[in-house]
Image (cartoon, rainbow, N blue to C red):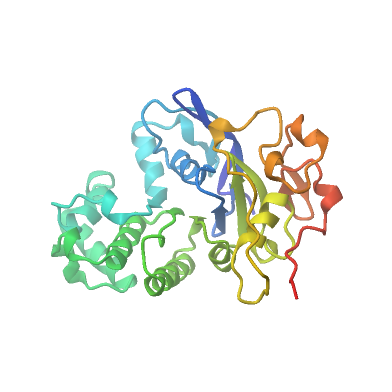
Length: 324
């Protein structure tokens, strides 16, 4: 099966700073891919670049290909059609709705303006989609401030799916919600993926959640993807020292230890990272002299990918251990 989405060598520059430094990523039809990493690693910027939602003045290099089409070359009708096939759900729903417009108007705008669907038919489709996310159609007449955070996030998911997209970009859609509501939203996303044969790029800080939801997980650091791995193997058999360090730093009720293992130093943003060396080398427990003078490439390794000069040497030694 070919890839639905391919991102190759994506660089994004905002003003004088480069925030993405050659991102490589692929998603197959119907596949769920997680995107994890510390704050500032470039996760949200990658999703916005894929959705053609970058800030004004942003400069891009590299390629984004969706079903064989060059996304960066699209404009006008072609771009509107692309955004009907690639939808995005944002982290904070209240920041992305107009508080003085009713839910029905917000949900059906894209159908009426881009797809030419009549208002009555668009409202009918919106009501049906609200039902699929567990909400009453009466909410179409409500305003955003009348809904809880969990309800509004469900509305955002329903609105994103109204155009029947093939790829959903979910940028930390559960971060602003309580734990119970998070579980409900994730269950809805999983069910809708099966019903609509929907591909998913799921951005999260929660490695456990990514492992539970996604087929594969891509790990980002300093504006680059440093590892891509089957989600089931991400914690027990990582391919990159950064992934292993993230796994060791997370709380785990099944692991006994005196204290959490913090990653030393501070994370680098893309604009701070060198283009001539491994950005993680100053914080890496496995760094060798060559790591500070040579930029590693993303290479294939045991069914995954790793951006580490010592990946082959370290193979099989990076799994999280259990302390007695």
